[in-house]
Image 1 (cartoon, one colour):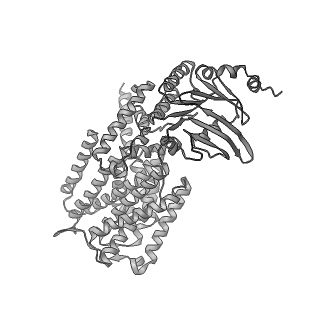
Image 2 (cartoon, chains in turn red, brown):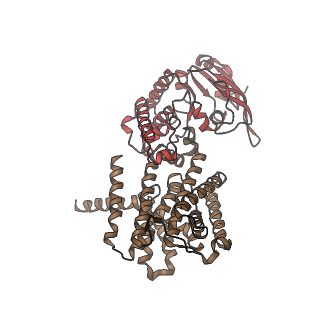
Image 3 (tube, helix red, strand yellow):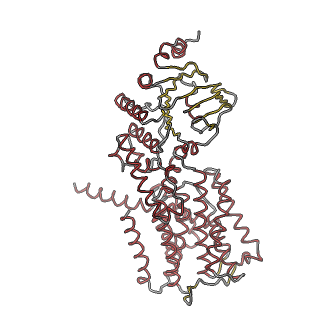
Length: 251
Length: 318
């Protein structure tokens, strides 16, 4: 589904990532973990088209998508969420998710201004499409609330609903459990599994080890910009190098 | 949906009946200007209030529409009904081409670039004397006409201008409530998230910049054909600032707000005749007060104020 091949990122002389490579299989949940400063978020920003890497390639469904902007990647079936949730704060919850239907609709400036019959039909489809994902994430009753007024946990769900509305094949989540309480984190775990059950590939950067170990099929560990280890949760838990990196042991 | 349509119809009826109240009076002429300025404010509001991009050069697009229409009809004898759409097309194309490099800039830099654009256009009006008549202006621009009906009186012009203005309001309301309008507001709130959702932020803002210029150009053509005379002084930097004031005072991101802002800033000088030379100070003061105390503009601020007063009134009785 997704292949990262020899990604190197240098920021003004500082090497944030060095020759990182791994492959992610369709329909799996993969966790990218590592201590602070390991380069996880940088990697995400490269894969999702927000940064352009110094070297290396990103392959989506076998084709090279290196350097493509996020709006192109959305059309190719890849979306992401953000660590500090990026909602459209001035719009309602429903409208936020309706924006997620952007790539699945096509009425332009003129058709929308004139309310052409096909653009009205499309608008109705956008609306029902959005409702479907509000239901899926369990926030239907908040549909008319202004997104900027949502509590953090609900905002997180909205961000996921909006990403799902794109009907992606792969979704990248940047620390989805950050700022959630333990109950909300449990709900998130179930939600991520339900997303995987839809056949959507999930990749998450996460600090919550319990969550990662519970739901991930595979784990990639980064440390100081390099890939330290890769394997199933059990393999990672038993990996001496990983344990050393987390405990700060540099022997 | 239906409520929006009812609101629009109520507004349209009010506009259609307004002349009965001011029959033939001097105010009719002022209301013609309210119509033209409403179109301009809506055009700028699409850019500023919806897309979140500033322009200090919109008087330039207004002027280009006016001069293109004026020169084509007065000097070259074109039918005004042909000059107007051609002017709009040319101005739209120009804005589209300039939009790509210029909208790469953000915030202050975009303000400076559009300011420069407006000034260049203004200089062109002044310096191409053979074509525009230079600082002394261009006269003899024909009125618009349909068959034997020539739009040459205040009342006729009122209906002509307001037909265009109402159409602009209707179409931009439709646009604002569509996938394009949502995408625009999304770009405004979080550009990176909008792009992740598949919105081509760059292309969209350039398109809106061009649409905004087209609306301004049409308003300019209407201005030229009703006034029969244009001169560069109407299209300078001051007017760009005045437009900006209308949009902010009325309410960013509100189509009816643009009407309120345009109406207030057009009617106000009529009542401030005595303070003639100080009008720019009054505009500046108004703008500051609005941004400080009613950042949502009149269209949101006034209802809020009433609600607060009502609450206070109830509170003191309890």
